[in-house]
Length: 578
View (cartoon, rainbow, N blue to C red):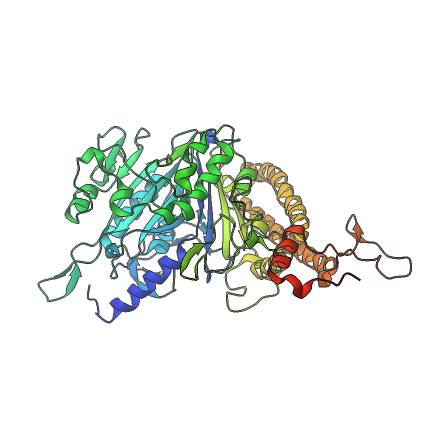
């Protein structure tokens, strides 16, 4: 393959910007044995300042010989190159396919010298290619490993959550950089094309998480029983295999000077993406919050997660003290360090209305000193997020659900869409508006419009938002039970009608979510107009008996704000004694 030198600087800049802007996603992983009903769960928040919230849809397809798939850079939408299509690809709705295989990611970056500017497949294309071609998490890992080996990996360090109806895997991957060589025809190519990676199955009954920091340290090396390399693909589907890794992962680290110890002491994170204060405080802390909510003894790792003691690493997996439900998964995605000393609603940055949000940039300087705002799981610049649920006791058509939400996780509504639907609901469909063009019927713009009211008067409106959010999500949890039963009956008597039935439910649910959110938006505007708070009861505004509203409340400011302002302004605002 020929490469133009002019292409390199442009793409390297794109990669660097993508990596910088992409350090914001959060994933949580729950194994079958750790969930309340035997589901496998993963979550994903696509946090970005340019990402639009839409539910991607790719139909199943049969491809004639010679068909090619274009790979687009996830950060810029720039075409990177093409790879051959297989004979058949599967239906994908969002980030789950018709076989209940699901995937999420977070970027950890690592060493810039390991980015390959000639790699055709970046992390985004890698995910979609794997989802289009896989029937299990293990097969997805194999596809990902082989595709980057053949066509090059064009992103910085990346972590992946990969699940199916039976198990969930955690995978980390880094490129090998660019080492120029010339072939016999005089064409330049990368002699180090490919990637280094390791994938580990989350043990049954355990949970894991990742949030923009490499988390794999040491791992069991190849023994053919529980751990294999890519030289042992024939053993891939042995259920005892728990670790899969690139065969030269240690040798390559040695060749680059990243590692010089004994093989058994090889630490992937230390070699390829060492943890630092920022990696712990801005990234691992988000994982700690999820672990702490469901696991005893996590205070032991508080100093690590807050960047005070990087030597005492937090475990990759923990065993929860209770079984995890889909509602729990939604709750994990709505964390701003509640019940800790870092609760973002309680410090001066929260403002008079106790907002957990801080505006970018999160790192800043003042009078020569450097400071930072905490980076929680919930953030205003989320494009979309989801909980993927895979269920082994149901047919694939019915078993896989993507609970999908747009915009900030704190005020989104996770709406269920089955993995076999034939199209995305219009409100969530690709092409219904975009990040530069408003659409009245778009879920993304509907949720963003309301969210801006929340940013203005957080503690006044968040209770109203949470009430309707719970109303919708609890209703969908119950509704899914009913839809499951009806779909199962169809699967027995009229299997061809299952997908159309679930597609109709998706359209109904998508429409209902957006309609209800618009009603809430209108209600909040009327109730909190101009900083007043109109009196209401059971959603009805109270009148004075003559068609006017009862006297609006004016809550004013909390004492903490009054103290800050009086100390700052002093005599300028003090009223005279008389």
